[in-house]
Image (cartoon, rainbow, N blue to C red; front, side):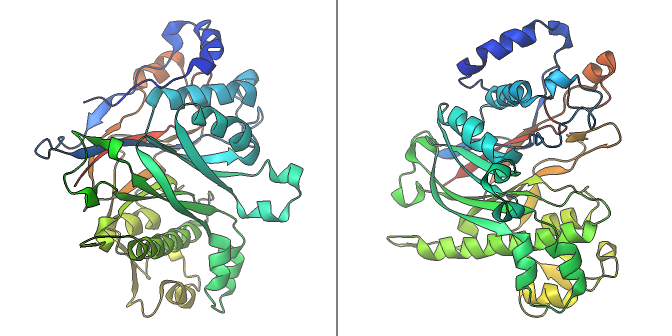
Length: 398
């Protein structure tokens, strides 16, 4: 089953014509669709939706000095932005989580173009934006989340500022303040509600099941490999906020004869985690726990702060109740970040595996293309970011 469908990209026709001037044989080979579970056709009604997470590379970082392998005209946002949008159009996903989107780009480029294709969206910049004057503030980047309005409607959102949460931990920990508080990464939570049109085979007989609630978390954790403990604590903060929001939504929604349970809320956690699969971040998110003795804490004094932050006694480990699984693995997608000195999987889509089935994921651009054109790093004229989007499909049944 292949979930690729081309979106409405007429606005980019001129750009596409420019790209065709480059030899067609130089374009990347199509990414293969890899099924991970069979479609459950036993239910008369179900929702099938696709989601993309994609670090689009902020213009502040996409400089000729940083990316010498790419012709500078293809680093210019007037060109590169069209290439980014063409890639988004190509996959036509139902939910889109972007990172490193600048505020100005969101307002003037992403939102109007995606609205014309049937999406709505929300955006939050890094924490530093609140301290800046308007011209500089509009150049600050971070997370944007979009959804197709024919399948989802917006319920509520929450900004997760790791900087603020570090202060709220109320712990006398210089390490928490010096290492975690000084980073201005953020997360963006959006609660969406499915529409009747989202159901294949017609909506469920029980009208109480039509509006399935989906919490989409979008984040970009700290980048520096020398600070794995910071990323791990940021992931703990994020799960705490997700759990809090799930509980809030669960209590605020009710249908006749039905009380929402915690497990009724579908959770998707997407983003650039800047973490490998052997990291504390991945272990914590995918196994629901992490021992406080984990080597990535590196002996820093976080224990009291973590206990205050997560609430109560930790019993030598931190846990969360989200029951998350990763939709993709290096066996399927060996790298999502492709730079000259680093090629690895650091972007993920986690999902609550107790109430959703992951049907499949797109694999990488075939290695043949990289070898034939001697592509050693991205961006590239046909690859507008140093990241590749992670794209998966899910099935939800009533």
